[in-house]
Image (tube, rainbow, N blue to C red; front, side, top):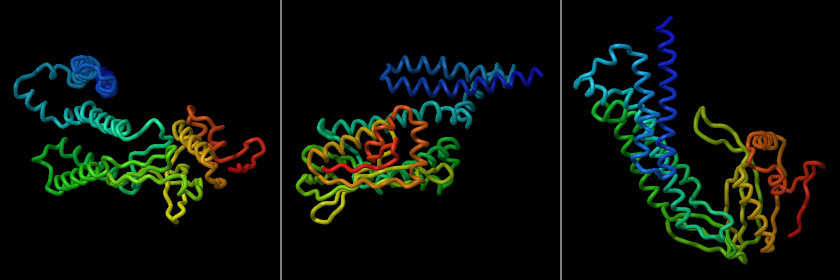
Length: 310
């Protein structure tokens, strides 16, 4: 009975150690705390509960520690997994997030009503895929060590990492923006500005799309603004989702289109699409349903769409 209790609390302390270990590093670097403070918090809230968990699991054997034990601890796969989860992953996510917002600050302007750091959608998806592949293969190599991993594993990691870096460098100055001057599109650092005089019509199109990969994927409702230019070309902006930020961006785009006297048609939602929207309305508490109704020009009381003449 005592052994069961020890294992229960040992497992509980292990969970606490992982959660607070991740939080201490993630929150610390996110708030630009000094490295000393982050280290102290990590030791107190992450490592200390981990040691307690180890003592509860191992009992007296945990106190038999020597140089050989320390060496084996450093190469222990369990320890590597713990370091990967609580230190490496939060730092990696912070670097990616910091890089994204740094690019936004560098490339965007205060007059933009819409801004995205990806100008070619499929290339953005490719970057996500190769980045995830590089991370997954890195996890395996880090845990079992470079020497013990097989050649195929190492080749996939090197190739996917190289492709990710190459795409990131190519897209470093890429973006799409909508502002008072028109549509600004930078692809592979080649910037093009399309004036409002060259925009013939805009269509607001919604659809149910599949997000994610494999078993973790799911359907959700998204919408895009499709700009039909006078030369016959089409420029798409989006996709947008049911979030506070995306709803505000969509309203700002519609307001700017009205100000520029650009005609806009809005597609009516199908029953299936409304089902996904209602799910979003239930769980996205920060977003306002009235904003969504305004975007798609729908009156929920009469259950009818209305037309706005531009």
